[in-house]
Image (tube, rainbow, N blue to C red; front, side, top):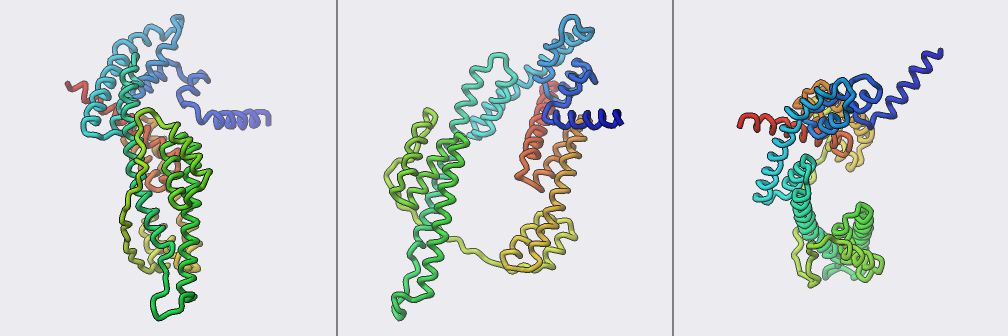
Length: 363
């Protein structure tokens, strides 16, 4: 009985440490030496992690001499190769105005550098360009969207031949204004979200949009002013002079969906397409929509989790390409699951590093 209790407590302990690196946990439990863990990390492309672990091995440790050889002959040369690779990549992407890729490359280079000050400056400059481009694009889109909403605010005017208070037109106007109110509430909510995320330019953007929809609102103006002062140096806000823009109307073609269409996609294993069809079925008010959506979501979650775990298994056996393929599948199925997204991003970074080392070796 005591043995079973100890086993259960060990499982709970290991589960609680799930967020800790697997190698860190095995080293701390004495299941593997720091030197062996560093070797594993190095072969997985985790060069700086391996370097840091080797540096922590004390002189009195029996693996100290081997650790120093590994550090000098393999780890540090690999670090320098990767540093050159990412620094060159950053410059190349910057030249092509791929700001986000350049920012990421400079960040990778800075992490590999022992004197990262210049690289961090490059990364900061790219970050500003990323934020500016994101803001400028979203600002233009938001203005266009708001203009379209306001255009329809009082668009339902009874034509000649009908009474001025025609009920159909009155109800149509009420419907549009109710939707406009919801749109304004969502816009204000977004301003709050980005204020909490410490993204002042986007909080400013949505506060500005809210003022466009609800003119003169004091809380929105106060937030807008506060966010303007919190912007990084060099960030440019649009000029206050209003610009008239023509709203584009998009013609939506509605196609009816049947429950049999959804079932056919399920049989074919096309779960994502089946979910989209089932959502349309729900909008049509179909009785079977909720049941079909529930079944689809359960299967998607199951398939995504299996792909994620398969990716973890592949990663532990140093099959990085296979791990990335599995994690990509998990993200395709559940794009909003942050654990899957983070694993895929990390896997792609390691994949790139290993490829960069191979390329450097051939030169």
